[in-house]
Amino acid sequence: MAILTEKDTYYKFKEYQKRTVKAEVEISRIKDKLAAIDNSIEIENKITKKRDLIQEKVTGLKTSLSQRKHADINKIFNFIIKEVINTNALISLKLNSQDNVDFNADYQNKTDLLKTAEGQGTTYKKLLCVAFDLSLLIHYSRNSFYKFVYHDGVLEGLDDRIKIRFVDLIKKLCVEYNIQYIITLIDSDLPKNKSDFISTNDVCLRLNDKNDNGKLFLNTF
Image 1 (cartoon, one colour):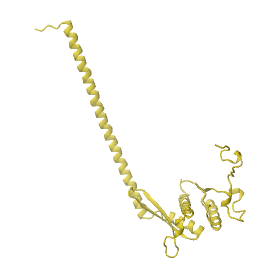
Image 2 (image 1 turned 120 degrees about the vertical axis):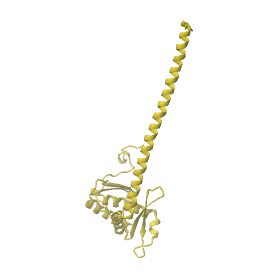
Image 3 (image 1 turned 90 degrees about the vertical axis):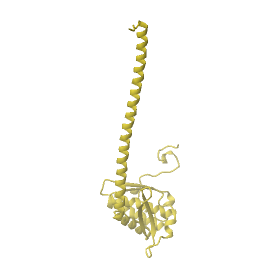
Image 4 (image 1 turned 45 degrees about the vertical axis):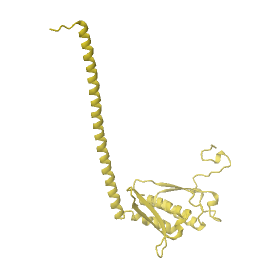
């Protein structure tokens, strides 16, 4: 019969202690693996739900495009362009390879509906962007949607007659649809010999570079 001495008991205790620590470390490692697996499953489920939601939205977009639910926006868009420069214009929407909507706007010849050279100029391209923004605001004016839009330098480079028609139309649209249109311009953008083109009531802020009082933030940076 073996007799354990006090020294043997101590070494046995230390050995079991080491084994216990090693087992606890292994258990902790396995728990971490299980947690990671559970987490990855949860993430995978979220990804699947997101993919399903995206696919649902893509299907909805395709349905809307096929049913031409943007027809009213297109109608408003063409009305604005026609009023300003007496030329028809059209918005076309399609899904690209990433299932995002591509917007394309072009002027059209009112006789043969062919794209005209006007659409190639930067100045007239700006008008297309302006008309599209306004079309959205007008179309959703009765909904909880943006009520204002800001454009910089729209009048720059336009014929004086177009400038006058454009601003006159904007004033009417703002009153009719309760929207706010903000535009920045310099003196040279104003039509010649048309002092009443923009009234004092239409001006929110006048800026100049004479001193800091004429700066937007009353300071030179």
